[in-house]
Amino acid sequence: MKNKVFISVISSAVIAFAMTGCSNPSQVTAAASPSYSQAGIHTGFKDNFMIGTALSADAILEKNHSTLNLVKREFNAVTAENVMKWELIHPKPNVYDFKAPDRLVDFAEQNNLFLVGHTLVWHHQRPDWIFENRNGSKVSREILLNRMEEHINTVAGRYQNRIDAWDVVNEALNDDGSLRESLWYEIIGEDYIEQAFIMAAKAAPKAKLYYNDYNLFEPAKREGAIKLIKNLQEKGIRIDGIGLQGHYGLYYPDLNQLENSIKAFAELDIDIFISELDITVLPLPNGENQGADISLDIKIEDKLNPYPNQLPSVVQAKLAERYQEIFAVFNKYKSSINRVTLWGISDANTWRNDWPVKGRTDYPLLFDRAMNKKSFVASLPLAE
Ligand code: G3I
Image 1: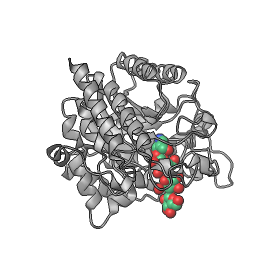
Image 2 (image 1 turned 90 degrees about the vertical axis):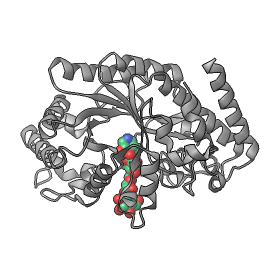
Image 3 (image 1 turned 60 degrees about the vertical axis):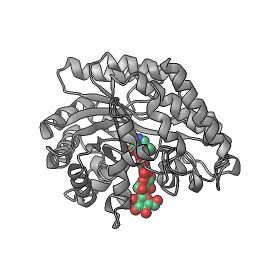
Image 4 (image 1 turned 135 degrees about the horizontal axis):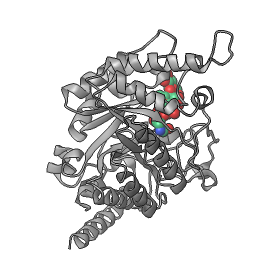
């Protein structure tokens, strides 16, 4: 019965959506139910999981607070999109910039939002000096471990009772499940992940400690992550959860693969959450690049940017349907999933506009470019 209601709700939403002809992103207006719209997206999921968003520096530091007002109405969890990454929070030795991070922590605290610090150890968005001696040669394992510890103590330690969870290590795996040969790996060795979790547990004993990565629906990568987590658990090193990033498209991931990953991670007795959800409607160059490998930089071509002014209503409807079916999977595993975080607020400021091709117009989030909630959002929580 429930399924029938669900299918009918989806079909009506999708048909209504397609029939409006409302294809200009700025014309896609608020959700159908005014009370739901006022109550915020997270209230619709209150029995399932938290609903979060990622905040940019602009949003955090915005003078008129209109974005922050929307965030506290619509979401009950927030993640630092960039401002806590090493490159920004610790750009030079002994130089830290806590302006935006402090504001974010205050904002989350004042509004009772679950706050995720992102991220302590990552191969990307970090300054080169971390790995270099004064003469440019690579530092020793011991020096790099000291730098890692000083960074984690200073950053995670500063917010130790105020940040609820840290993405301690980000994207340490290749798509085949092997360890990425980052400078962390090359200089310290494969125990750099263990060391980071040990240091984070000391610096922020009350924060949840997470591993975060993309493409974890792929069986080989899933197995690599399971191995990584089990290794920590067998050594008695605390790891509290795994973030499945969720940078998806209209035709990937395969939903059975996604379900299989959720089920497999649930057996490890840790938190599972979707940490960076967005759904691109744009074509993938060469049909590849399903993940978030930021080293890719492909030149723009018209055929790769088919909707520069507006999204055709048929594609809007497909996006609505895709969000519905993906949330149906999350809702099915609500007892295992504790949070679903969208990677950004609106289509205007998503990283998807610049990856894997710079300067495109994408439509991957729940709010359009005019900050209006997309109409299909209202029916997402009904999916069971
Ligand atoms: O801060 C500079 C600013 O000073 C300058 O004016 C501007 C000009 O382009 O660039 C700004 O830096 C950009 C930064 O975002 C802040 O907007 C960088 O160029 C840009 O590369 C950076 O992109 C971020 C990306 O991580 C970097 O890899 C995205 O915003 C952010 O959404 C994205 O997030 C990652 C997660 O952390 C990990 N998982 C994948 C996800 C998507 O790539």
